[in-house]
Length: 86
Image 1: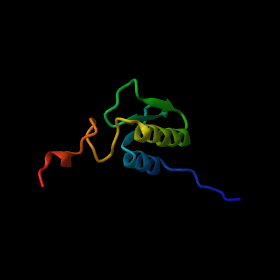
Image 2 (image 1 turned 90 degrees about the vertical axis):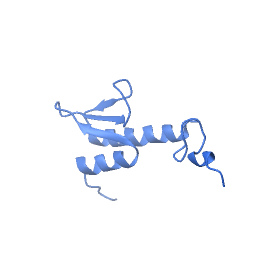
Image 3 (image 1 turned 180 degrees about the vertical axis):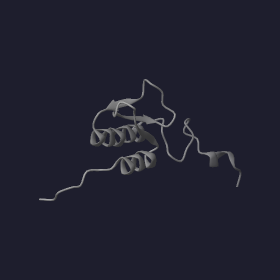
C-alpha cells in the first residue's frame, strides 16, 4: 500500500498549465478550472483540489480527442507548414 502526499496548489496549477488550462483558487476557497481562452460557461468550480486536477485532466483528454483540435495545427486542420513552399 502506497501513501500519497496531498497535492499542493502550486503543483496543481503547474499540471493545469502544462495541459493548456488554468486553475485558480477563488476568494471563497473553491477552485476553478478553465481553458486558457475559456469563459464562464466552460469553467468548472469545485471545493476539492484533487477534483480540480482530475477535471483538468479530463478536459484536456476530451479536447485532444476532439476532431477540431490538433496540437501542432491550426483549428481548421491545416498545419502552418502547409503554407510554406519547399
